[in-house]
Image (tube, rainbow, N blue to C red; front, side, top):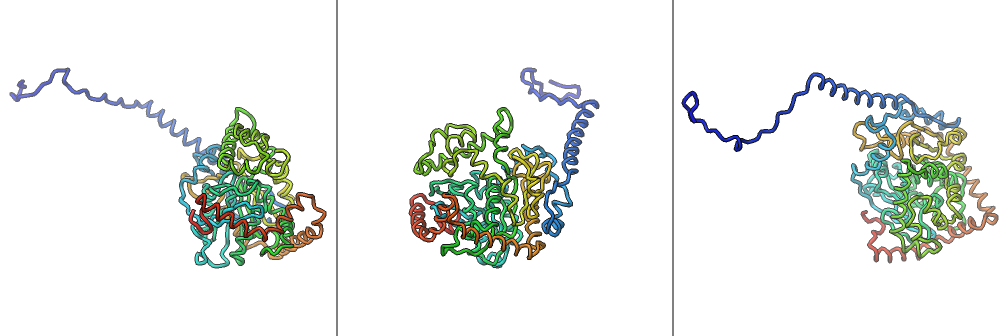
Length: 492
């Protein structure tokens, strides 16, 4: 066809013309105003939540003494600055879930050291990035020992970031893996529980035997905090030292062997914790199901070892959906308890906090879904313990900043507290703690024949440790050859 300018123009029928996408309609002024108002509303909400969270200072409960007067003034993160959670993750469940995912943001390598307990149990001490090497740091460089939560291990995010934070300060750092956890074989009739505090004693003894000049610190998370609390109360009164007093085992320290300790996101009271998580149609019940799943995974992995111990119906426990039902199926009985309520009573922390003499920080969030109760009265009456409670933080999270997958607020607080204790806690007070532990150990030796039957049996087991050591090591090496577990010093 010719157009008006006498130029040929190609025309296509309507059916052959390409269909162009419809043009987007431009927002009207009212629409643009609505979008802007919505964005401003979201920003205002985040700002309000962040300001509200940051406006509440950290609640401190501590007894009168050296810890309050000489140590806490040098922990500004607790006494001068409020905790500011991530602006877009202030909710307790957001904090808890994102805290669980924090392990994906750090690649950690460990060198595993195996430890054999008196009853044949196998523990794994994982040294972060080979920091146990003699040329890594000076012989008197501080060491941080990390205790993980239920069915966890050194692979957990909070373990990796805690070890990393200490490592980059020039410290040595390691995480203790409990019996059967994180790839360890279950070589004893019993699994792990906060009642087995001598497992911590073995780890501390092993560390101090290798680095006797190094100041040692420990931090426990969740279930690990229950472990650590019970151990501190017992060791500060000479209980663990007295168990090895009549044997030739190397005993390089008195008391807990720790300069300072920290217990983060401890449930404190297992009875209240169980009640909170057992209410159906609540978010706490979902956490209960998640923990029960981890327990069932542990039982399935070590099914043969558990059945060899006898007196426990594994199939019945595997069919249970909640932690309480698994415990009612007989799990506490394998640990030496008649029922779960006796287990709750013996492993909860309220009865042990008043007896701690090692400077100890309890760090909890009030919105922690696993928190049983805050030990405010117990810490306020003990000059050696301090409770720091925040309004937000979730469970083992305390995330901060717009990018919360790096070091958490709790990592900085714990190390700042420990450094303050090492620098400003009076040597005279530390000497008094050692003297009290020494007196307690002597009293335990004198009254050993008056102890209950199970306690006396535990003492005998400790006294036989040296005789059983060689036999257990040979057994372990045979199992390693069959199952492919790395030996001492192997990369993990």
